Image 1: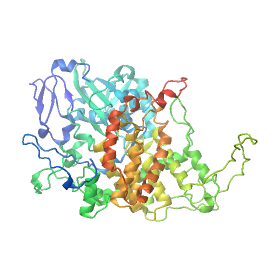
Image 2: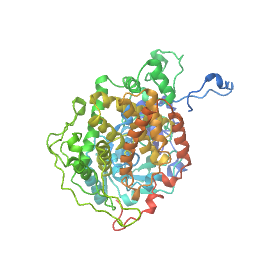
Image 3: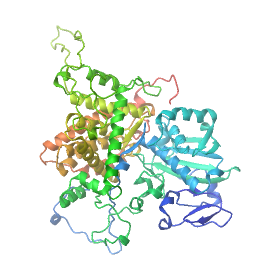
Image 4: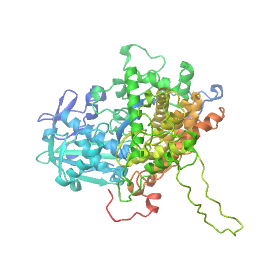
Length: 639
């Protein structure tokens, strides 16, 4: 909703500055898809000067349930389906945060695109930005200012050159000049033109932001509020059941009409099927895990097959394959970059040391005795310990993704044992020992590698968020390296199955840490990865949903209290544990032989209640927990 100041007249389906009469705001039905984000509400002169605004249970026996007849005066409840595109849930972006970096960058880009379409960009002389709630509390550590400047300059998270962000941001700070959409030069002073309202939360979502532009005489040209709701999705107050909640597009005219549905409801089974009956929808509109399972049984399809057939509503088979290939390629490249970097510390005053290169180096050089002899250590091309033949970067075309490193790694000299304790004590000290879990060790290394790249502002796949972006790539890489005999099929099955689970969480609870703490990020990612793992192991659809249930059940209440507002501690190691937990959840579900006590729908409902009950101090604000109990040296300002 782009609010325009001064008097306006209707031009097509939007309003713009004019000396004519003030037009009433058009209804949603009157809006074209290319201008939905600019749904106009024309404020009065007084409003233009205002500086602030107010702020499913498991299947049961139907015969045992009482029949409820709805009152004739009350319409029956409408079920909203959970289906979005898998390629909106898995989107390519930039670190360190989907809600604080990717979302704001996308919102800023949408804002300037709307200004261009309304013919207002050339009239802009001043830009004012206000950040609210969690976005203001931890925005500096999450690189929100950098993301906003890049978005206002016309960049989007998927294509921006991540290596230029820092220098371009410093240029804005130094020169106090911002190029809107890369063409309109305006003065911009970060200290004066950006306001941080961490003490105020707008009612729609904790991650709120307001953009306002002014003309030469100081008159308000247009203003808009955006909310970054997690996973890079952006909404407006008046379009929160529509717009970028269900797709990632900047230019809405290029989006399939079914993804712009205002109602997003499940049509009745007896609804007419003619093309004129309304906007066509994907064929399998599930709204819960039980409805998803019912569809797999009714149509004799796997969860991945249902999601694939839904994607065919938007894309061709070749396009689907290419997008899956691209997602996996970015994930794999992210792991490679994480283990091969020569940088030793992460950005920020805490100077957190990178662990992935060291872990990978130890694994590949036989730090754990016996790995080389077993021939199970995969080697990543270009990595720190790159010796011998390398693993190909494109696992989708490789039928044998393994590279045996037997005989290529030499074990270091055995170190003298260092034993701590008194030998004459009743409880004698224990000698130093090491266990060998090569698969798990690599799994942890992969997850840490991704999140260190994310913490450094690198290119990652939001899956489903940036803060949890290491869990799913690590588990999938583990499958490709240690289990798979057909990587292409396994990667496709894994990602589409995980996407279905992610859709259920997005509809039924949240994937935003500002709403649900870390259980909305690492917890959801763990559930998605557990489901994907079980699917690639040939588990039944119900077992797959149970793997997801185990993953989230044991993440309920997980807090988001990052040190210094940075996506580093405890975020990076938490992804490693989330990946290990996902594998364990999948194994437990497959070993349970259909015996379980809690359904996925019940776990999602519990997550929603838990999120509502959690204090805001544990929702990405750094106001409690580790963020306040750990002392951080104050030698330099937070960056």
